[in-house]
Length: 94
Image 1: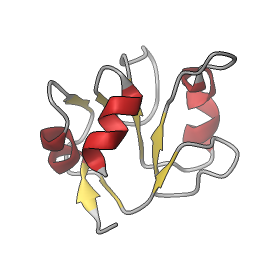
Image 2 (image 1 turned 180 degrees about the vertical axis):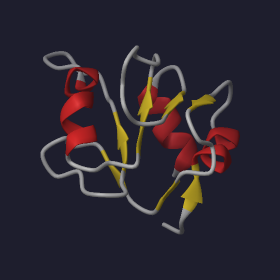
Image 3 (image 1 turned 90 degrees about the vertical axis):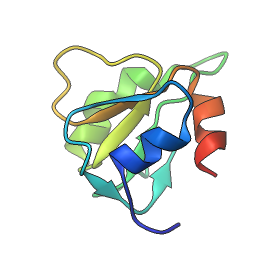
Image 4 (image 1 turned 30 degrees about the vertical axis):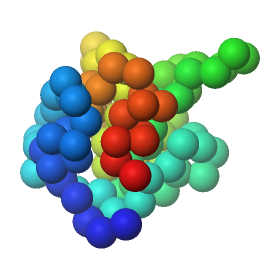
């Protein structure tokens, strides 16, 4: 994937909005909070047994550039793209 800004990524996702600096860039996308790295965009997926929104603090501490979330959480110290259903939003980025 080529480097994208959050603003560019949000334009690819219908109805998405950026909370934070829209010029923040990322090159890699991760859906696994255990392997997210510095500068990555973390996609918070919700499954039957887990909700990755619960790990947003962890991925911020691991250096993720930003997160793609269903809803913007209060008090998170990193920018987010609020994009509704994150699985569909991830598909729009592909």
